[in-house]
Image 1 (tube, rainbow, N blue to C red):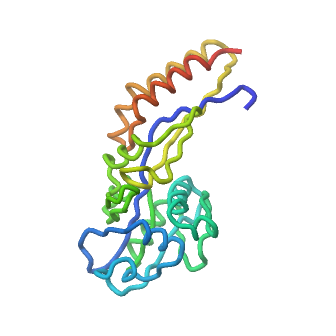
Image 2: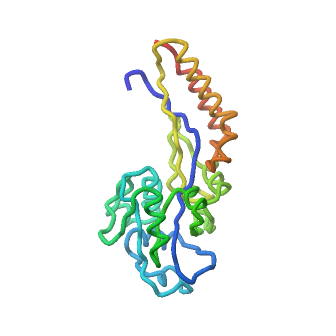
Image 3: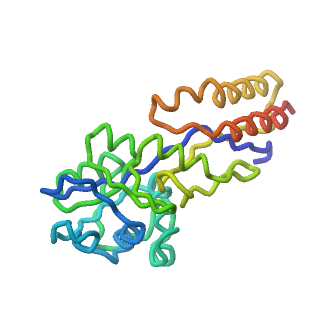
Length: 242
């Protein structure tokens, strides 16, 4: 990046764990231990997750395509399960166990889970809600079982520590919904002329102030106000014309 770069955090979101357990209508709580073991291939039956669940084999569905959703999800599983971290890996295309089944993108995973009894998978939380797919309550670092709601995702990101360059470790937040990620804009530090530099500053200022009010309606989290203000100050002081 010869012209320099500034990362600007803009919004966050959750990744939901979806499931299909015929005959089970209660709230599905999945512990940190069980979630890690399911996606590491160490738990293969719903009875191992909870004795109240049916004796049925778990069909694990993951993304066939390389994706940011997968990286967010895999980063959390790697943080809570050593087998996953060392053998499968946190990336956009993990080395999934051979018996895992795959679907293309969110809609592919969702459709496979909906039609397969005993299935489990992961999708963007907004996709799960819009398609009326049951989502699991996951145990977070604080010990609470939480749903992938906007409120819980905001709570998770409120406690995340941002680095000086606005990157952040979101793989296992202290509280709130445990599987969350952030999106960023990447803007140059140097632009060909002053008009473009000023336009970028104006855009970033809007995105991190008035623009943040749009996030909730689109089911994305807001960037914590102190971080948004610090990003604005960084862009205003760093972005200029050559």
